Image (cartoon, rainbow, N blue to C red; front, side, top):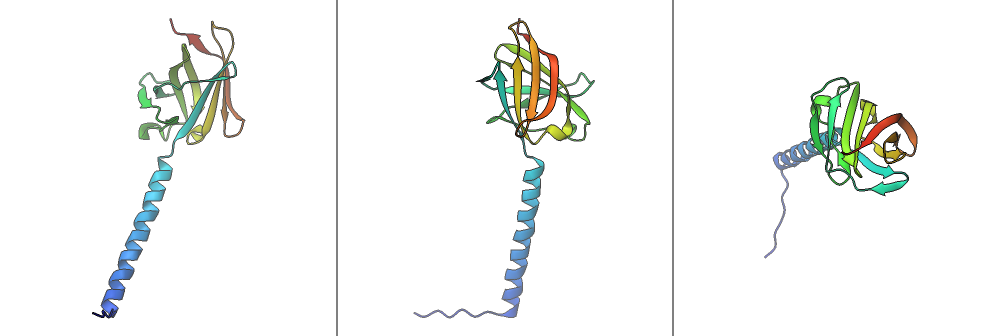
Length: 147
């Protein structure tokens, strides 16, 4: 049996319309995924990488109400409620320490961070390096031991 494909102008218009719709949806999906990209984090204590917390608490700087955010595959998603904040505070526990980072700029998010905790067992300094070593913040008293 031989099949012959016949193209009609109406079918060409249908195919073109479908292709255009798929292209627009693909574009919208990529924009949506970019808007929901994450902040990759790594934590070091006195130069050694330590396991990540399972969650962090985020809040607008100066406000008590926090939002718990899971850490999934080293990634933190900035909640929609905080995306227009000027600065954000983050608290979490890592390697037996309570860590509080105050005044992180919203522009720091959606990048890769290395959070370096240094000092004696009684508490010490933090430095957040963002994307290949650019200093995001440094605080001399951002962590204390968990009691």
